[in-house]
Length: 284
Ligand code: GUN
Image 1 (cartoon, rainbow, N blue to C red):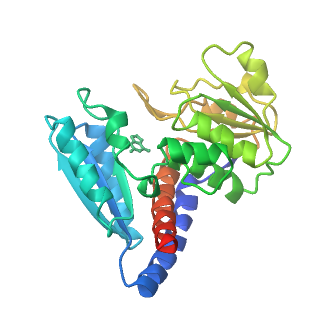
Image 2 (image 1 turned 180 degrees about the vertical axis):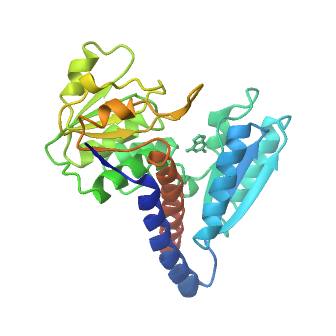
């Protein structure tokens, strides 16, 4: 039976270590690290995410600024809000919660965030730096998955890693991070042939496709490490992209949903905010 990777506990450790570093930053620089969060509209899931992000920000001793804008906000209004935070020297990180209402141009709004304040690691400059293997801000979810693997003592170098999903936010940066750790990486997607066989060859399998319980036991190698990034709301409640009950009999380690990757994403957002604050300080 697989060991369960406790994302909640690992995230708690990250936050508790951060709490100390954030306090040290305050003593040394006489200012509080600040994260600004912008939420446009009233998407209920986004409201919950933002509330949890703000709570965690304050838990580690950072200052949180929140901007709740109505769903009817214009492109100019949202861009102006981002621009004013971009120019505010007391703000270390800017997060625009996605998805935005349909009438807004997401790319144009995100591109108002300076790369140094892009705590989500979404901007081309940060994505490009990751590809070049340079010190940069890495998207919170794949950064959290890597932290889970390392905290769980998983050997990465030389291993076959398979990433299910090719999104800009998870699949692609995940593949780059695993490559940097000297894994042999395969990215699978909806057009991949012989998917079962490819997955079965994985020592490390990361599932991020948004299909409830898609990964079955026959797709997993005996002793593989399986990380489930999926969050699917179904009639049977919240489930991941992995058939947890079946796969836990085959894997050596597996992350659950909930209590796996989810809590890590918020912890790494705070880590990114801390890193952005340190880089901005060093650049002065
Ligand atoms: N919406 C869902 N996940 C995320 C995330 O990681 N960052 C932002 N900004 N919005 C999201």
